[in-house]
Image (cartoon, rainbow, N blue to C red):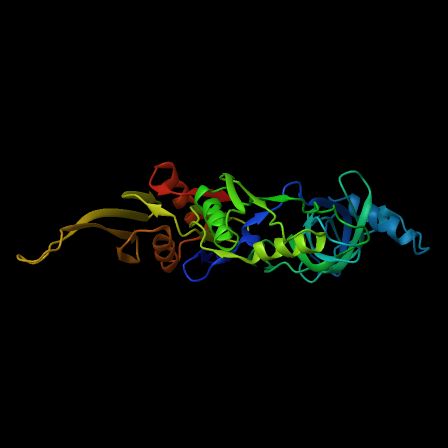
Length: 361
């Protein structure tokens, strides 16, 4: 199987501000999870095999609705796969809105590539049908097999149907604005919540206060009395831009090999050996002194160097500030596989050298 190198995304907040509305939400606005069971057809021989007995039973039941009687035991359905379908219904959405759906194989299908999901009803956690979904499945990759070989990219037995879900019920109601409203940060951070408060108070003096790292309370000015005015005020608050704190997380998607590195991630001096690969991070002081008769001060800075030794490839170095992004770029240039990359970051975290939270999804 040919390995596919991971994709790296380096999160940054240095070039533009971020809307307050993109960093916060309102309390009691949890989305509702919808699920359903469906069939994907049109697969090129990559559907469920004989082990998934529920697939031919489901297909036979579906055919009865069209007046065709077939015995489930006589069906050999290589072009059909049984899947679970899921999505989230956000608060405030109305009947007729469209959202994306996720599909995941239940049986032993090898790929959902090229398949089409037949009409599937989605129910809320209380068993009430609230939406339906159908459409072509996008898996964002491929999976080709022949005798003795296999070439794949990403995870081919799970996919997405963009805008495939149609709601026939309204979502949960959003709270109506009163004399004050609460902004809840998606990622609790004291610096960010204080920045939100300062940005609001610069335009509406004293209207906001920081309650805790997760909460900012905004008081409505007296001029906003009607419901329409208060909704307008909320929209203005959401459009205010701030410079949020840099993220100190590394998010790893093992399914696709994607690694997202936050801007606040840093590394301590350390060394990691993984198979034939050795990663060494060193830290040394760099002293800058003023002229003999100058009025300046002596400045001591830290300069880091990353050394990566891969057997058969040679030695490579990165001078300058050592960051997780530098390590990721270097390992990627050496052709390190996604799983080895993940193992190296986990080793750095276990050794206490990685100043970040590892999130594996």
